[in-house]
Structure formats: structure tokens, C-alpha cells
Image (cartoon, rainbow, N blue to C red; front, top):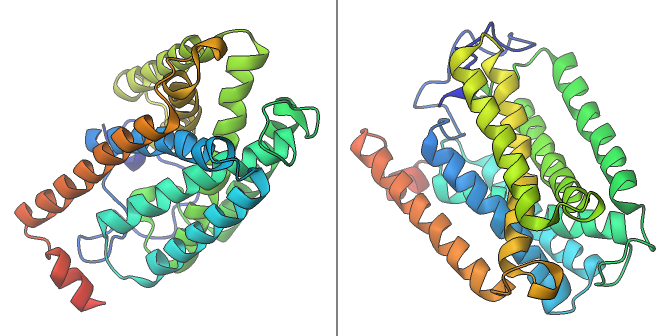
Length: 287
């Protein structure tokens, strides 16, 4: 399921970064496989339950939780930008950080300060979504203006990776507002909203195999949609039954999702080792 290479279509906009995919010695981002999508959905769902755990369950509030989680994201991102090769553990730490920070920042934007779920103190789901869509569109416009490829298998420069992470942070924040809008404003509820998004992603998968639509375009659409899927699924698992959830709680759901993510990261290192890539110790000592 290699959406990102554009093999099912004619490629994406801006192709001047590299003539082909990054070699194994220079790539810092994961290959787009089935494991990637499983871990991405697990990370985005963890972002929803983890962000809610800090801001709501622990009553830290959206402001304080956003400051803490965004700081963690910045530290992880700085390390990710500094390394010269792909580290699965570091990469997925940054992804999880964008998801958790995106959850609390989106809640702050749409609901305002505090830890409640009422939108009277913020921009509301639609207003917050419009702001974030504008921000994401701006990032992609700047990305296009640089002449760098949207194809994530060709991201090998510092500037390209910085734009990649800016797009991810905004898309994960947007995904929270989109998921909340679908679940709350449309009356679908958590599980129906998650089902709708999953069906849309199934259509995208079919388009990848049976149409000539650019694989790069399909990748980014699917990538963005994993966040509202994770938001609605996470809420369905963790929220109380009175709100339409299964009442499993943010602690238990976050713990299970973290275990899935860690297991996937460990397996990623095993795959790299079998493929002849450097071990974790070799990667660290090479930096």
C-alpha cells in the first residue's frame, strides 16, 4: 500500500527535490507499508485519549496541557531533525507528540480555556476547523513554492522535513476538530463517525489500486483522515456511556494503544535489522 510514491498516478506537485526515492542510507522517514498505517492509526488514537487524559481526566486544562505537550513535541522534533537516519522509535514519538498536542490545542481553539466540552468559550468546531484548514493550506502552498516534492519517500532535506512535520502537526490538530464535529454536530456519535471515516478511507484504498489518481494526493488525504478516525475511535472507547462511549477510560485505552505502538516500533527495528540496516546501537553511535 505505497500511496506516497505516486505509482498509481502521475505523481504529485513539485518534483525537484530528488530524482527518485531516498536511498536506505539517507531516508529519515518510514516506508509507507501496511505497518505504517496500523501504527499511524494507533498513534493518532493514542493522541486523542492521551490528550484527554491530561486535560480532562487529570483536570490539567487545555492551556497547561497544550503547553506541556507542545514542549514535548518540540524537544522530540529537534532530535528528529538532528539525526541523519531513520529511527523508528524517535519518528513515532514525534508522531504521537503531534497527536496529543494536536488534541489539546484543538480543544483549546474550539472550546476555550478550561477542561470542559462546551464550545461556548472557543471558536466552535466549524470555526476551529476553518482556521486549521487555512493553516494547513498555507503550509502546502509554501511547500509547493519551495519546489520540493510532496512525495514523502523523497523528503531528504532539512527544509522538506520541517514542512513535513508542520503539515503533520496541523493535520493532526485539524483531525481532532473534524472528528468532534462529525460526532457531535452531525448527530452521528463516535462509532458512526468512525465508521464513515473508515469507509472513506476504504474508498481511497480502492482508488489507489483501481484508478490513476496520484498516489501522493491519495496518501495525504488518507494521512489526514487517520486523525479524525483516531479521534472518534478513541472517544468511543474511552468516553462514558452517557456520552456514547464504551467507558473504558483514558488510562486503560491509552495504555493498550501505547503497547501496540511500542510493539510496532520494536518490530520495525527487527525489520530494519533483517534488511541489513544498522542496529539501534549503530544508528545512535553514527550520529
